[in-house]
Amino acid sequence: MLLQRVRKKIILFPCFAVSLFAALGLSGCQEFNEPSQINTSRIELREENFFKSYPKGDVQESEIKSIASHYYRYGAGDLNLTVTYDPRSKTNTAMVATHEGAKIANALRINGVKTVDVDVLPVKGNAGSDVFVSYPMIIARDPAECGDMPGWENGAMVDHDETSKYKYGCSLEKQIAKQISRPRDLMGRAGYKTDSDGRRLQNVLAKGGYYSGTSSEPLDGESASGTDD
Image (cartoon, rainbow, N blue to C red; front, side, top):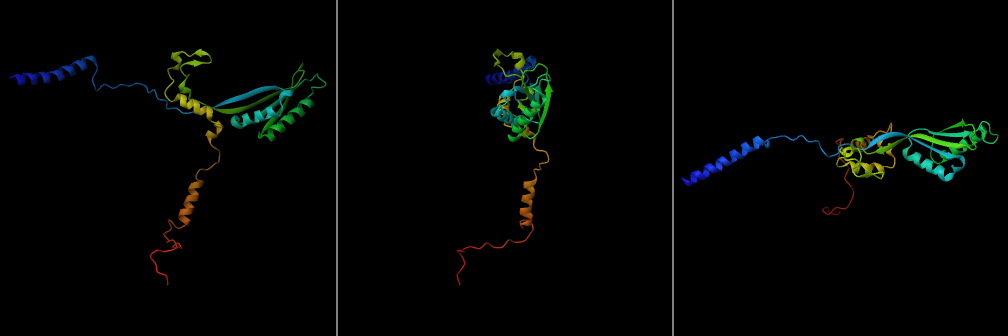
């Protein structure tokens, strides 16, 4: 009799627990549809315009190399070089500006900038010539979906509401993007065929006899089992 009462208690308890969980909406079959906190986006390439001005006297050899180095890494089009002159000046003339532009352009070409477009621009009242350098560039950035990194940014605390999209893995993409030397290389090269290695391998295997069905000639060498005549 005692054993039957114990069995009834054991059977009734799980039934009560199931009913309780069902009433509270805690059923084990309930599905949770929460957005993932793992970043699935990758580095993005963005187009921007580089622009910088220099007084004519500041465009020396070191500055030329700096411009050429930056263009090599990020440049994605023709480099535009503009030199100003004063139409009322007897010294800062259009001819002087044209000569200065040609000299700077030649120095840039020597340092690897192949396409340089030179122009001169009249500016009244300009005591000395100014040099303007501009060109389109491609830069690598972390995914736009990542948003701002939580914490301090530019000396100010970032609002948590604006960092809600920052997911696990965004910091890794940000750091990798900063280390890419030439972002435009990620776009590949036009006209470059990647099947050249496959064709060479096919020629070696097929023409070399591996798939042709012909037997290879035995290799010369010493034998441990043969007898000398």
